[in-house]
Image (cartoon, rainbow, N blue to C red; front, top):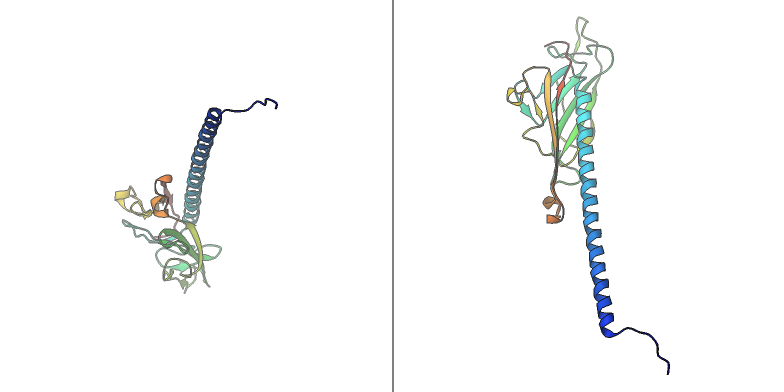
Length: 220
């Protein structure tokens, strides 16, 4: 019989305990880092979506020559206007190029009905003899029948998980708007952890952008 080096039972138990402790620590570190990674990723996605939506509203609204909704002194979650259409008479086109209508609104999301999303509708206003002729073409303000896909025109889903604060679009003095050609745009997106079934494992993501946009119109 030869003597062979080995481990005592106490040493084996101690080794198992140390290994278990290390495995638990590594699992906790992985879970925490994974949770933070997804939290940061989600926050970046929300901020990016709000930023893209704001740029879309700003760029499109800056081309407006006729602003219908909200009315001056009012606010709401619908923004309706037209480009290359006269504000007073409705004749079009006022200048070179085509006339278009634009419609931003909030409706239940097509894929997640429990949340609301910001949609953008747009379309070309057909025909048009111009405003400088004896009998110009007149546009009466035909906007979509309802908000969301199939509501009318070309529809784009701009931003999910909307949360008006209290409204997205304002031309009211109470919101600091004292000029007719200014629209205050406040876009807010709130991703609710509890609403998506995450409980306390994730935090809410709440992001808001606030901007004042000036429109350019030919007449009042």
